[in-house]
Amino acid sequence: MITTNLTGNLGNHMWQYSVCRAVAKKLGYEWGINPSPTYDYHGGMNQMYFMDVDFGKPVQGEFTNFYEKWIHYPHNGEMINITMLDNRIYSISDNTRLIGDGGAHGGIYQCEDYFIDIRDKVIEWFKIKHEKSLEYNNKLNEFNITLDENLCVINFRGGEYRGIHSTLLRKEYWRDSINHMLSINQNMKFIIITDDPEFAKLYMPFDIPTYHLDIGFDFYVVNQSKWVILSNSTFGWWAAWLNTNANKILAPKYWAKHNISDGYWCVGESYTRGFTYIDREGNLSDYESCKIEAKEYYKNKNLY
Image 1 (tube, rainbow, N blue to C red):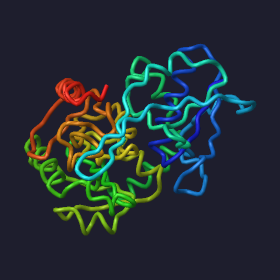
Image 2: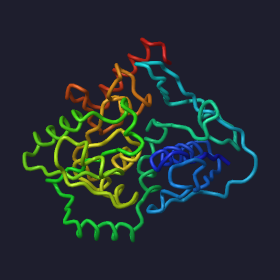
Image 3: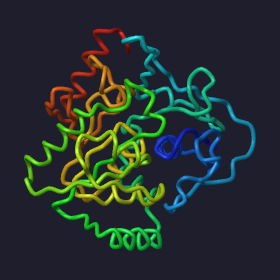
Image 4: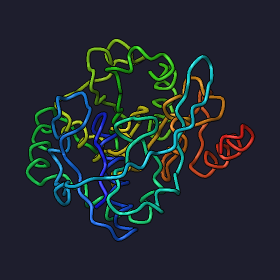
């Protein structure tokens, strides 16, 4: 059996879950995951409650730990954790637990290459429960929100990001992203979906209707939207990556360290097929160009 620990918040759990299940499938091992997180910000709650998720077989027995490789890279006064596709994972033995580097309870594993070849299956793994979809659509109707061609959903991350200057996205990012969407459709309207509505209202450079209900509703709205502007959050990443309706998904170039990076991605291979990335000057890049630039950077810095 292959297993892993769920740590962090929902987006982290989905990365950990997906890589564990995908690797077990590829290697022909049984798998199982404890839905109660080892460490999180919601008191051990199963944050996937609104999705019809199979957690596999009961987790039993002894496991050998597989430690994901983290590159510790000093930059701009910070120690940046960079992770890349760790091919050692495809040589693990049965009865292995996938965790992080240096004793971390959980891994990062933020590279879609772990499961891009089975994307359709991953979409099914995280299918939103029918009754929850009905509930969330009723809420949208109550709020008079229609997720149509003229509405762009902004996923703003506050919370613990507030105190991390290098991670809390600059106001200019939101301005440039909104202006880009308006260049596509001058009649575009915007709403904000956020974990931190009070801070979002104070911080955003425009006066935009702001909503927060619960984890499931927030995820559903981003997941169903035609136009999306993302924060550098794993929550937003998953809601957007599983979105089969989106015309365009804008995201911050260099992801978690959009504010300060000189070419690295934090975490290392989080550039994503189908996303459009915007840099600090407002320039746009696609997946392929981001990947080429990042690979060259890591090669020049001897980070491989």
